[in-house]
Image 1: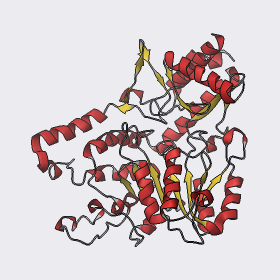
Image 2: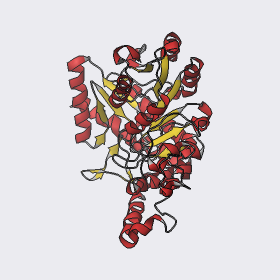
Image 3: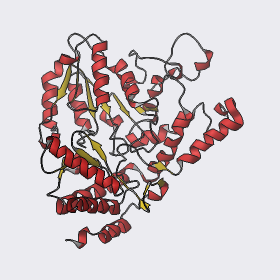
Image 4: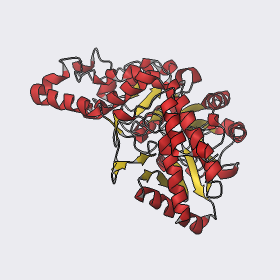
Length: 428
């Protein structure tokens, strides 16, 4: 048993893996004289080596051509956002016309709610999960208040009903049925950021629509992590960021999906000139005529320097495909779970579901030995010890360490190193 869980065994697993690591395509931070074991792709993905060339291409074009760079060459700036459209659509299971890279996640969420949250006296409510990412909750509460309703009564939060802060599908179904006549919008995460729980998105769409509610997803922790089929799911809209699993840099341009059935919708929206149909945009007329599809929700011309790194990352996803990456993710995270249960069962409690279908690559961990301040102190102590020893996860209050083996660049060897570091902390 010890041999099966040794660094040598981890190295053998890496050597035999059906999808060899693309680690060489990334810049890996170093700790002392070795590469870091970096498990924070769920917070900020590593820099693809190809990103610099795309950014420098834009800088060189700007230096040599200035404004003419909008109109010349294969990577001209006027249609630059189209360079990421098709690979992004492949990544999320959408039609190219259904996706757009623009703005930031919360800005896109507000823009989507302008169009898709249309509350009435009978249907003012939005349903989310309790403990949702704060920015989502702030956005939802502010939209409810902006429309003249009360977040105290019209923001409905489903509390966890399973150990570790998990929410069962049965609980979601009950809540949507109970509040259905009052629901204007069901807004749900693809993966819950703190627990790492992944949800059956197709089922949630069906439940919401059956009650007459609109359905939207925050896929910040889902895109680049799970296989998605947004078009076939029928979800009305989705938003996500590109700085996590999509490795596009801090504060990267975000993404948005609008289902094809809304492509020519007359729903109200906050309009801007880059959402105007391209063929007449530069006539500078007073009337807004939206581009059909997700592009019609654009406001301003896109930040070209911000889009450039996304091209490098999408090249890598296209090279191997999301299915192969997901299969490798299952192997890596399964190996992490196996080692924790075999060697650290008395030290770490795994919060994330054991069912691989209910999680992505992330395992959320708590140090065993109490909750509250004492449990948090122990967890924080372990987290700091790991960082001092070149193993980087991330911390989420009050007491969760998130470890996320990203299949593009993490290895079984990284996982083995994490477990050995925890054992070192335990023995210290």
